[in-house]
Image 1 (cartoon, rainbow, N blue to C red):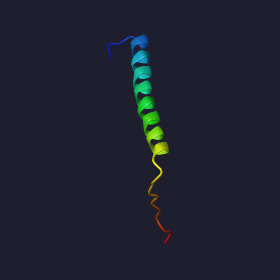
Image 2: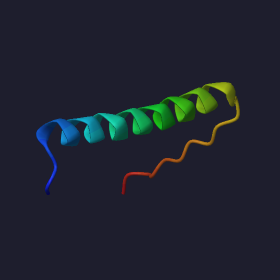
Image 3: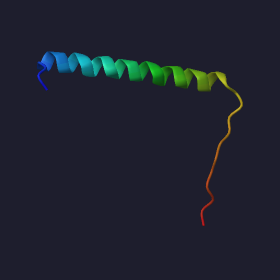
Image 4: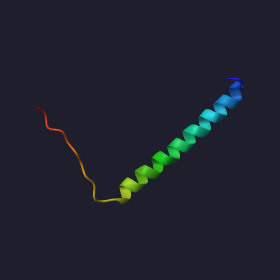
Amino acid sequence: MGKSMDAILVQALEEFVETWEDHLQTVEALKETEDRVQLSVPKE
């Protein structure tokens, strides 16, 4: 890869934080929305 272990770890942590922030925003948006649709598949 041509990168040091430190650079790889920093990149991994940055990507994790970005993904985690998106996740938290999605969870917060779902909490704010009262109307939700729940889908279910009947057992056959």
